[in-house]
Image 1 (cartoon, rainbow over the protein chains, first blue to last red):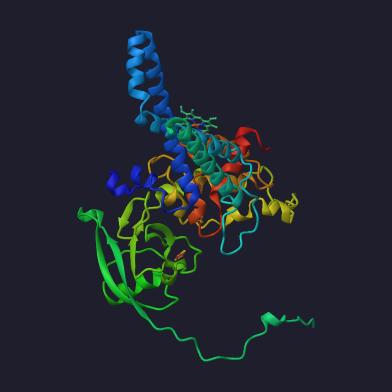
Image 2 (cartoon, rainbow over the protein chains, first blue to last red):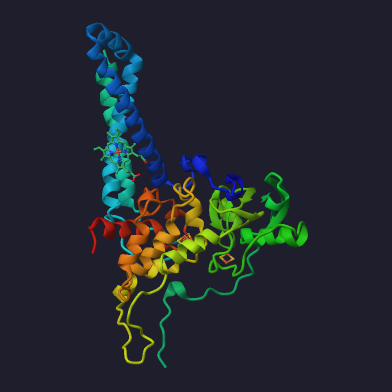
Length: 144
Length: 259
Ligand code: HEM
Ligand code: SF4
Ligand code: FES
């Protein structure tokens, strides 16, 4: 069946974090930060490997990365790293079946107990820690 | 005969004049698409009068009765029990019969067929995949002994045993969860939250002995590990099934955190 007939939402729907609450936003941020960190890791390996080509090449690279632009990227990496780790720990615990609530008799208006306040708190704490770490990082890297 | 005390709050109030509701006019934008005509999907707009209590399904039926009878829509029970009337209403999958227009707080309401299901026509979608996946989960009690054989006793089940699976047995197979799921949006072979929740429903039943089989069925490349706990399934489920919880609990068995 063609994709048009199958009416699948596709990547556009997958990355749309606006409709299903904070947990869907966290899903999207985990994915984005994971990919961002992967991109950074690859870039970082490339960056540091220039040292194999001698001092000149290394200094050349530093003149590219030790710049305000490079430092803004690093601040973003700090944020992604902290959020991804914090939220990643929440996911590892929850995806093992812990902290997702207990089955019971559903009562109207049927709030899902897996989307509980502890889960949301963990997401907010991960965001807050990431923001704090970014502020500290920005102070060190971009401050005078 | 026992008498029942009625508390103060519950005492019926003296009869008042019937509640007055002034109808207001809203615009329904209904997605039209007929695969056999091979034309593009398009929206048609209908201005209709609604009351405070009018549901989306009633509004669609009003359009069918008065303005355009050709709109294809599936429904049956009109009371959130049959699971037929799932559709995308203002961008989110919901049951048409269970969604009041007033709760959407909008004068323009966009109604589309549910995503991640093939469109049959207009708002009616094809449930073949959902039903066949549901069947693959062995949605029945697997047990060598049977209550119906005369020599065996009934299976004892305490209220506590019942609570372990009761909420998951309320699934009406409406497919809203599969439509909201971000994995389902891109992976056409994914089992999906509906099927995974049902695998858990029977596995958690103390009369059942089919756990090993079902774990094997969900433990495959397009199975349970594709869930990333985005929780969108549980966000839209109209029956409080909470498929996201069922999936994580089921995964707990596979990871050895639960017995
Ligand atoms: C202590 C550090 C880390 C923890 C606790 C962690 C945890 C996790 C978890 C639990 C997931 C799966 C989330 C899900 O079910 O959707 C995940 C996904 C991912 N992680 Fe990490 N991670 C860490 C560090 C990293 C690093 C350093 C990188 C990159 C080099 C990375 C890249 C990724 C990628 C690409 C994904 C896939 C994202 C997706 O499919 O949505 N992670 N991480
Ligand atoms: S789990 Fe909920 S949303 Fe999914 S099919 Fe069952 S009743 Fe519908
Ligand atoms: S018509 Fe049966 S669930 Fe809506």
